[in-house]
Image (cartoon, rainbow, N blue to C red; front, side):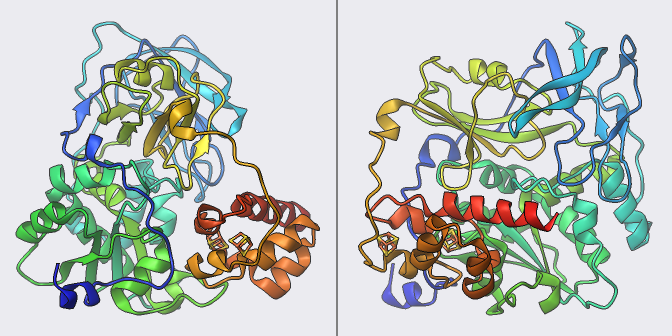
Length: 445
Ligand code: SF4
Ligand code: SF4
């Protein structure tokens, strides 16, 4: 790489460069997972109100059928991932910890992968509000991991004019390659979904940002872009957390989201590539979201790869298919920087699960002893939001949560974990900040 090209890379200041670990899955095409004998469809697998069941125990359901309706605008419906019989509607284990009311479907043995319930629609002739309704009807949520209802994200308050749709194809978390494969294999779906989203938010242009460790995706998308020039694709520096909305906006557009503000305050809406590809695939067919692509990786599986997984598939079934040896020290949903370790393999894959990381005890290493802060300043140099994690950490240890929020901008922390990653004293800074935020949220409620 020439010096000129290096200096010309689009990026943000600070951040970290963890080992990528993507080689094991990035070059493997997406494979379809067979149906598990039993599917667990939680009614609350998104941010917002849980959906309301429309089926009863003993009722037969078809693959793609609406089985739970949205409960208001801040909610999404659920669709049957496979044809079978409703066995139960009861509390079931969830990745979030508490048991969640779920529809359990006993899948027919000869159940076909064909989607049996859909209704094609001419999305190009729908007005923006009708597209928002169609997005909600599809049950789509942010597939990058946030699980925020996609139709809500597209419904920008009328007083904010949007000039640019930023499409997030960074996938900066180590191990994860879901978005990479979707960009390569569902390029036309992605471009179609991008056009729909542009129409809804009123953006004249869209910029797809892709980390420069995925130049094959940049080239594939560039070759398929429409000739009008309204959609472009740009490579950005491979650096964590490039996939954070605020960082990507800065890298691509040179704009900064104000402290405490939203992206629409600066005329931008951000959507993930996986979400827009799903939108481009589902909307013309009038289908619900019943499957998603999940990266299964880590030293604890012998068949790592990207799998198209029916929503509701128990993790134990998915991992069994991916060659899980059964001796993992830790299973993480999402990536190693922002994902969460889970306590049970009986939880289902939900709409927000982008990856399952199976780590052995060798990969995790010995538990690290926490030492006092040595004031080295590495966390300050790493923080992409330019906070003072060291000071925040000291205040968190004293439970000075109000002071953290009022004087040290705790609410702007994006919980990226860069500070914990670099801390030579192994202080679990980001965990402190998550606790502080949840205490403040509870107090406010
Ligand atoms: S977790 Fe918060 S404080 Fe730590 S580096 Fe990320 S944004 Fe900064
Ligand atoms: S990186 Fe760790 S030891 Fe260094 S200043 Fe930050 S909190 Fe203190």
